[in-house]
Image 1: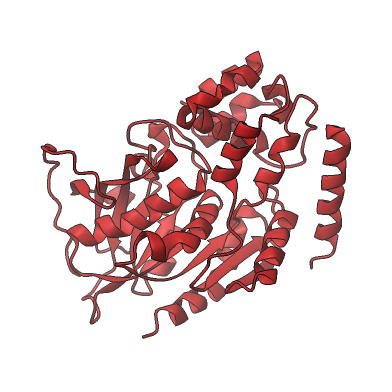
Image 2: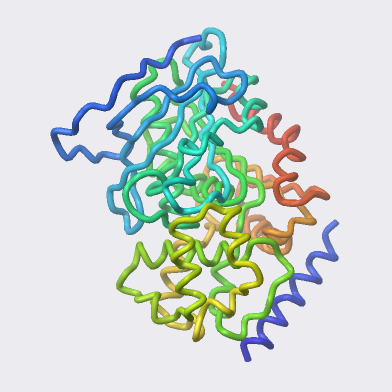
Length: 380
């Protein structure tokens, strides 16, 4: 039954695919916390960021530790970086772009502010346009706990609260801001877009840009079981391992271990320590079906997965740019086509564009259109 249902799902995907053609940052040493101040956006530490970690072209940069809202809406710490463009800020302050990064892993050692990858050269394209960049690591990625991978609401909170945190330490920042994300960060940017004005009404949220955003994964969760076939995709077993490890940490009541084979137990142990490249090479030929000893058919598990993975199809009150590569082997285009169709049917303010590119390449291919889109959003 599962194999037949999956075959039908993959057939739909195949058919859909064929049919689509200088104001300084004032850094300070961490101060001891004397009271349990956990309001979202509250900064607990601000330090200088090593120059080798900076976005090329940045005038100054710092690393912040701040409170946000994690899984189950509980207070949680996150880290992130703040980058300022050169020159003097415009009237009203630097407009802010809150960057949401793609998959790096769920171990603290994988956090972009730890590895130095936070200063992605791609972000120079935005910095050079006169935007300040803030870049979260996400809750529990570099801070206590296990990062809940692809927990959209938790990641969105990290993205929004990074703006609050940055404005708390840098007076040259404007309240005008937008979200920008790729891959895992694309999902984060989409969920951010659906909640930003409600979660942080004191800020002037303008919109979002998301590329390579994984969507509709919650609809595949009921099919996961020992008979789940090998997929012609890149990294899918790694992503599921990260997802299950994060879900296990966030929801111990679900007893995820009871679903795991010995291979699955080993994969989740590796997930908690290995960054993406090491994880991918370490799993070798392990498939998603090799991870589990029975279907993930418990309604509580499926409900938890949906709460993490689902991208809203209503509730967007600011413009969104959604880009997808048609030859993406990590996030298949048909999943994005389904999301775009639902957004259009619900009359959401979403501009959807496709490109004849793969996963990472889409981020760059979309740059001319997304830069123009954002420039219009920041018009008075």
